[in-house]
Image (cartoon, rainbow, N blue to C red):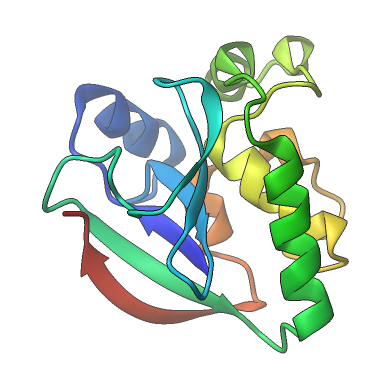
Amino acid sequence: MIALYRGKSLISKAIKWRTWTPYSHASWITAAGEEYEAWPKGGGVQMLTDWGANHTPGTPVDLFRIHNLDGYQRRAIQEFLMAQVGKPYDFGGVWGFMDRDDKDHNPDKWFCSELVFAACRAADVSIFRRVAAHRVSPGMLAYSPVLDYADRVYAS
């Protein structure tokens, strides 16, 4: 399941302002409640057993399901994400995303929505066609026609 955070920090507000969306962060939450996310603090790509732990308590999180996601695709997404754990955060990619300059993209590092999008693509889930992962913002994910809004929860 894709989790889109409505962050409260100054950086979150800047991301939301720049992207014209209410979302500043994206992650993947498994059926077991594990969260995979690219996070600037703590070493980049992480797997957390307590989802939302990196976020301000009370931060609203909108959850989205992918249409017709089968077991093979779900496993492929999780295997892709597990293989990325420990890879560095892509600060340059975020800056490139903010100033819309591809030269800052580094395929060996990840920022949040880029990681989620690439995981879906690795499982042959087409969130968007003809869009590179490093060009996808957290809020852009919410516009995908293959996602269904599921619920709003709050980070604790």
